Length: 195
Image (cartoon, rainbow, N blue to C red; front, side):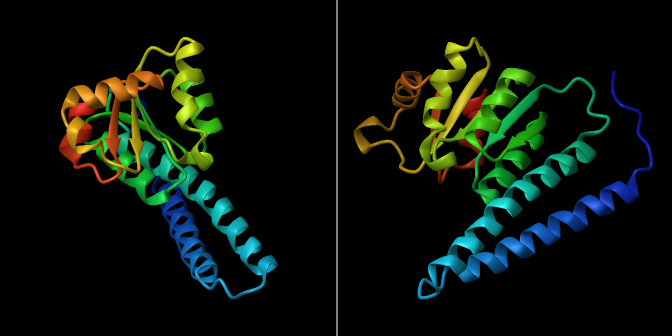
């Protein structure tokens, strides 16, 4: 049964405010990280700020998605996993546009826990997440009984001699994924992969 629509504009305003603050902190800390001549301790602290704020932003984005999806009824659940805030936001938007309720995870472990606890219909996973440990997420989830569709997003597009859809399917099946998309995918490719 869908949640009743209530006037929660104060909560929505707080959520948007927190998301803007997290983005500003990420931007500022990223500028510090770009200055490699700074002392290691300063760079480490900036990295910690980025990591914390990405988690904060992910939580706020999940709340914003929930606000946007109120009244969606029995829409299926999709999970997006990435520690790249830009990619995570794009995946969340595209999956929401495709009619799914969306849950976001900013780490491989968070993604695995969400897969096992929430059992989404679809999971789109950036295999670079948590320094590449998300690649094993497909095998781990399948081994634990997850039956939903899993799509991997990787850095490099398929080789020229393997550009057909079958190459995507075969490569993905090895790691427990049903399909593999290049990081530079078009929205239509995601829609086809989650099909």
